[in-house]
Length: 125
Image 1 (spheres, rainbow, N blue to C red):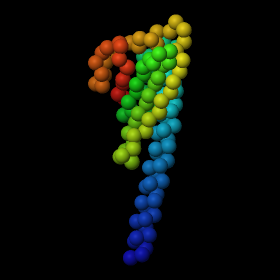
Image 2: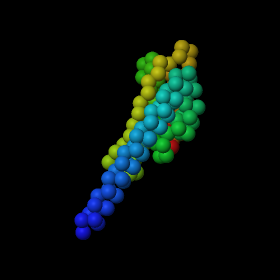
Image 3: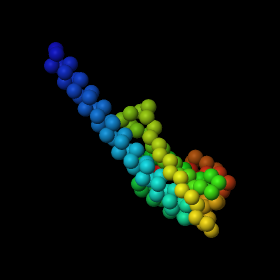
Image 4: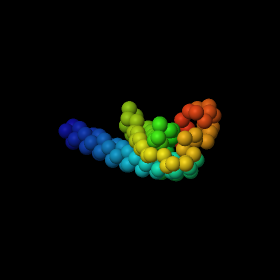
């Protein structure tokens, strides 16, 4: 009886450790994706920024790129499957380069927003 309880406890601890490592890995990928998206969008290349963020971010992540004054803000949010109550997010901010078209990102139709160049670009991966 004690051995069965010990094995069940050990399995539970291993699953929680795996979930923690997975969450940290997802956080690093979200940070990298947000950083690259903000950097590229600040240059004025919003479409490329979302494509690069898509390739770096975890599966089913939500990528948002928008202008906030003189800054370009990129946010990447992912949902953890192993920890269902945990949403992992990262945000990166970059100063828009002078003369860049980052002030008005091109419309990227998605299921999250209507095509309107005044609103943030939201891309569901």
